[in-house]
Length: 255
Image (cartoon, rainbow, N blue to C red; front, top):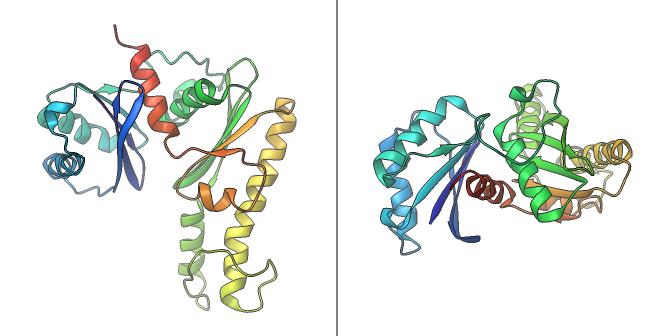
């Protein structure tokens, strides 16, 4: 089985593949001070919840958006699973042309998402990844990665607002009764949640225009389902998009 690790700024998304089938997934929070041994023991315990062991893993692949964490998870793969991990980077084939001005500036997660989007949903496509940042990526009709846009994530933006505005208390980020808030709680919920819906709709409209229309829009990441419920510009939500992309890149580079 293939162990795929998607390492982000706030969480690590792990998936175990049996061939093309995603057999199990887990997500754990990122803690910079956590050691390889701590992550390794945690991952073994997670495998055990699905009646799996370290010996179930035949190979590992890592996509990492946080370079300082990469050596930690490479040690985890080597020490606890007995395999040197394949690491998504510029030495691996992806099957996708990167038309960014400097391809080395494109994060591994963005490339991996593009690979999965093209393979699963076809092109042209727009990927909206709701992570620590809200990232929009564009793939043209020829299957080339063009670039995208990066905005502050909904979590970062709301936390900054709460910490900087003395009169505004933290609220549960959920749908308000109406866009026009009649109290401060509902006003904050409207501005944050529905405001991000407006951001997504506006950016997707601009991307569609520049791509010539007809692009499939895929949402992924923590807030994808909540945002997609409020707009019809997101065609589908795929929370395992990055894991599928890691599997596809692994399969392309073996043998």
